[in-house]
Image 1 (cartoon, rainbow, N blue to C red):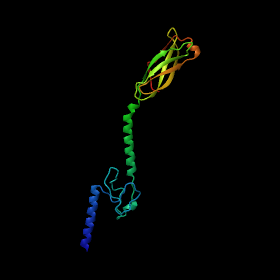
Image 2: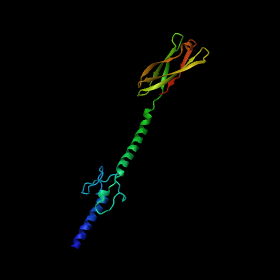
Image 3: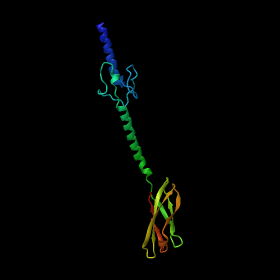
Image 4: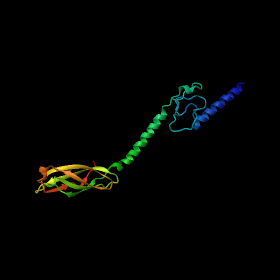
Length: 184
């Protein structure tokens, strides 16, 4: 009888060693709060399993009652943040818009206290751009500088009105818009 008991014990230890070396776990079930202890915890090894001895206790087959799984959520969360940072860094250049080009259509006058400019968006996506116009007198001195913001669809051109007060418009001789309108 004693020899048979030793043989059974040796076989049980050998099975546990093989299971441990091949990545199977007998006391852990992923996604569950505890292990029932009757064969439900086995599974293939993955990077989220903890194979150190600190989380598995050898208390004579009752390791299911002392089960603690701190790794699964942490590993999943870490994987999500590293994946998120790499995708956001690769998509950052595509969200940066190139400046739109600006063309003067008409300058302000006493009868028309605003300048009309044309904004062309060179980007495939739409964006809001800020156009700036200098209103100058006959001596090319600046009377006023005004800005206007306008949304322009991707690869489109839009006309924008840049307002000026009536009193300043009476003194305007010519206008000079900034050649490029940055994305707002």
